[in-house]
Amino acid sequence: MNPQFSSYHSPCFPLYLLRKRPSKPIHQKNTSKEETGNPEKKMYRCRACSNAIAHVGDEITVGDIPVESMHINPNGYIHEIFTVRSAFQVIITGQPVPADSWFPGYKWRFCLCAQCGHHLGWSYQPYQEETIVFFGLRRGSVKED
Ligand SMILES: [Zn+2]
Image (tube, rainbow, N blue to C red; front, side, top):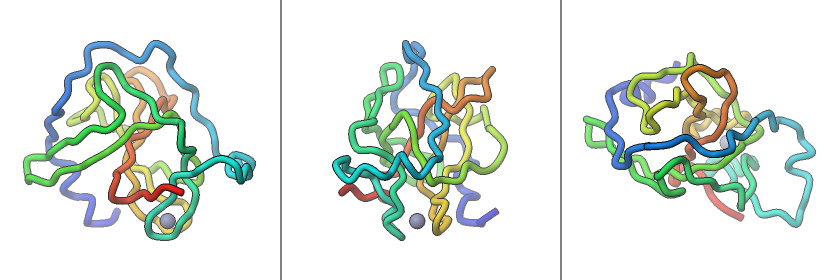
């Protein structure tokens, strides 16, 4: 595990509280290359290597939390993230962690670029399920077409 991640294990305090689940959990299994084959669609890309990782337009709100949200951990590190329903050409790593989630009721795992390993954000899944239902991507790690 990259040591730069160590601070992310610290407790994090959500600036927004989740009061309800998304009405339609989204099944996420988009790892095929076809997902990225449409040149008409704008993409979110890894800022480090330009690997396409999500479709612009796939942003979702989670409960009462807006698409764009900011979260701060006890070390004072501010994460500006936005939420999307799916991501591809990414690596989900680590065990799902229920503690310290910015989205109460969801466990998180690290989401890395499959091409260069850059830390892009986190995947989220409900406590009792193994299906990832959304991703929180770091603004600073992602660029847009
Ligand atoms: Zn990359």
